[in-house]
Each structure stands twice: as structure tokens, then as C-alpha cells.
Length: 265
Image 1 (spheres, rainbow, N blue to C red):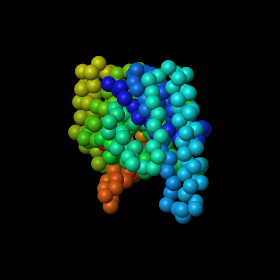
Image 2 (image 1 turned 180 degrees about the vertical axis):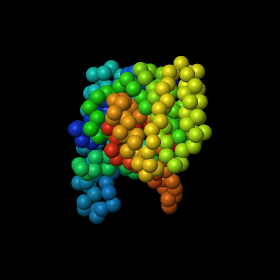
Image 3 (image 1 turned 180 degrees about the horizontal axis):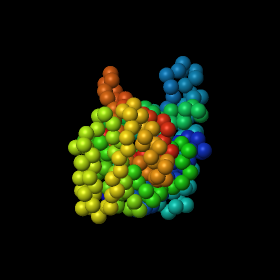
Image 4 (image 1 turned 60 degrees about the vertical axis):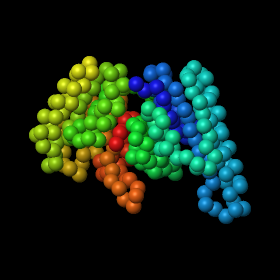
């Protein structure tokens, strides 16, 4: 069950949709929601640090004030945390929660959450929902699409998403068939469907042909055409200089997503 959620709060009030989305999940599961924001100064000359830190802290406190007001309005069990400096990272904090929620980057407006998302996905050991920067709606579970390729990562994501799948009106297992896909993987799609059926989750299995380089586009097109309200997928990446970086399909999904994406690694 989802009973304890951590949310990365956004400074800009125009991005408060992620807060409202997180609140809707907390409400659906009677879960506790913790809103976290960091205030810190960059590595700048000493005479500039004071003003920069004060501005960062003021913005962070503004986000917390908006969060607390919204939680009272929705009558939710919630708390806020302002982290001064960086004694603990968001991914470290997320290890003690059932689910973390972060908003997508918005490069056009200078907001980059990519490093935060990477760390939460690869370092927390917990599932993550990334919310589109264009998100307007609260949680909807009309149609949930689960990406399946037979891998450990995909299996982990689907298992972690079980609480959401149980509440969904429709669940679809989606397989992108290409030169790397085998008939065995397609058959295992039927198997994972039967497994979910034993959890009283009715699943429809669909496959689509696509080139290996176009997996992300195939998934995004399918999500749009089927009016999906949530995408569940494994978060893939590889190690580089002791850091994880997204695989191609994962990076493609996160850059062009149109619905919230539930991910596990």
C-alpha cells in the first residue's frame, strides 16, 4: 500500500500542479504527504552568497506556505520540510517513503530537475512518479499503460505500481516489438497479464512494431492515441563515472511525456 509519500516542492507557483497531483494520490490512499524543498547557495564569492541564500530561502518558504495552505484545504495528513544547505539529498530521504513525486524539467523556463529525477530513480530504491510540467489534472486512473519487455526492471515497476493498478478502470500491458524483442518476451507479456489477474486486475496485452531507435516514440504515440492517464515503466540507465544516466528510451519518454510516468529501477 501507499501510505507515505515524499514530494519535491517547486519554487515557482506556476508549477504547483505537482503539489495538487501529489495531494490527490495522498487523498486516494489516505497517505501522509511530506513536502520537501532545499534552500542553498551556489559556490560563489562570499559577498554574493548572503543575498543569494536569502533569496533562495525566501522562495523556498513561499513554496512551503502554499503547500501547507493547500494541505489544510484538502484536509490531508501532511508536513513540510525546509532543508537549509544540503546535509541530506532528496534521494536519501526518499528511501524512507513508499513513493516519491517530482515534476518534469522545463528547459524552456530554465528549470532542470533531471539530476534530481535520476538520483531519486537510481539511488532511492523506491518508485517515483514524474509529473509533466504541463500537468493540469489531479490523479486519474481511467487507463493505465504498463510497458513490458520481460526485464527485471519492468517487473519491478509493475509490482511497485500494484496499488495504483488495483484502482485503475483499465490496465494495458504494452510491448514494443523490434529486432531485440523475442517471441518469448511477447509470451511473457501474457504471463505477466495472468499474474496480475490473480491480483484481480484485468489486463489487456497489446504489441506494436517499432524500430529499436524509436521505442520512446512508439510508447508516447500509443499513450496519446489510447488516452492513457498514467504510464508505468522501468527506468533504465547505465553507470558513468559513478553516476547513473538515463537510457535512450527513458530519456526520450521523460523529455516528451504528456501523462504522469510511474517508474522503478
